Image 1 (cartoon, helix red, strand yellow):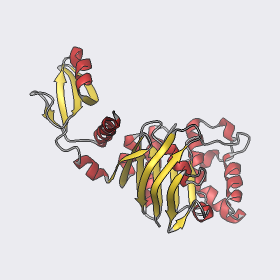
Image 2 (image 1 turned 45 degrees about the horizontal axis):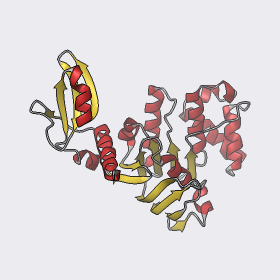
Image 3 (image 1 turned 90 degrees about the horizontal axis):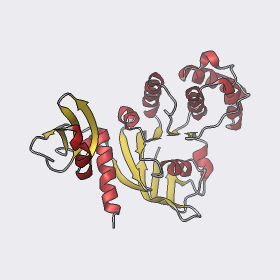
Length: 294
């Protein structure tokens, strides 16, 4: 199983370039695709799901060009889009049965899959309730179930934990980890903690371009010696934020503990800290932004 993306570009009719020269070579495991809103994550997901055609570039699945042979990928694809809609007058089980039929599953196979998936996403006890009565988080879990209906080899999930409570988020992360051994999983999100919990590889997008593509460990190593804690009075915080990249602050009795990202110590009183993936994400986005400045 291999998904290869080469020189991918997507430019819309209004001139906006959503993706520019994106290259990725993805095998089994979980790739966490990180980026702020407008970075091009959802566009990339739609192109990979064969919903949107790229302007140029090439995408292959096990050597097959999916632009010219989309069904090769569609038959093994599970996709949860960011804006997942449901039919409110159908029950969860009826809705999944409808989608299973559209995917070509036989009624017997569909019944078994739906029962197991409703159990998996913790909706077995409400499977006969109309979707119109479901909360946003419950609908999201139905979306996760439909993405798994055909036991996909390629699973693409776009902001999958939106609307889920903390317990459900942990449950979904564990599910992704269990699925990843025999599948290619692409998890698109702006929540670093979701990626940190499950990803074996992290790709960061900014303004449609890849600014990092590496393992979590390598991403952390790239910030070795660049994270500092500086305790300052509250009144000085705005000035520090003007001069330095601050990834977080904590207010304590002795002042504001500012987490500063810098190649060298920002002050004599600053002490080094071990980096987090949140630090690495913010640092690489900032560096990419500096490179875009005229």
